[in-house]
Length: 225
Image 1: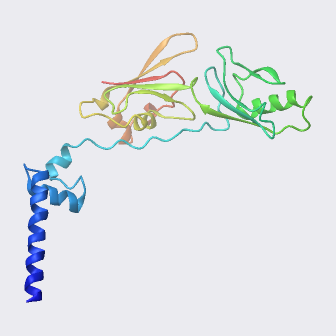
Image 2 (image 1 turned 120 degrees about the vertical axis):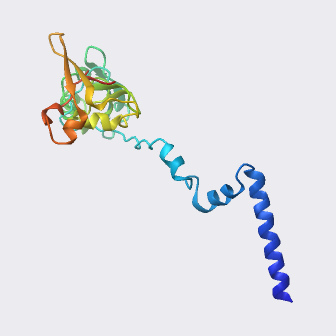
């Protein structure tokens, strides 16, 4: 009798669970149980195919040792055991920065290690054997743009050698409406002329015309029709 009574209680409990699930999802009562069992993405193949691809997680790009500082870049300058001198400083439009005791220095055109050496040389008159480190915390002067039919159009920091394929990957890839065979790269030469380059995605990924996958330069724009 105890087993029969227990079975009846279990049966009534299941009925109550199903009733609550049906109230939470009146259009499809069984979908509530499927969601609980398999998560939010336990749907039909058609619904899964219609769902847009997940964008890759963004990562913080760190400039390499050979990165050349430019106007607008934000620098974290640390002088060991000297908190009054250590600071975060944006590079001025003229490429200069001002550091306590060190005065005004030319940061634009230098790498972080070269700038650290300049600051150390200036501080040596006031501090015995100063230890100086310089890090670029925000890249502004070197960037490229990806516009048109990509998942994440916008401006991206150019912190190291970046090819067209790598730039498109950073922008999340193409939308379903893109024409990958007619991507245009706009590049402005030092004398002010604008040059257009064609990029055929299909040809490049199949090993043809690999020279199209050129390295981007600061200020370049990719346009995906």
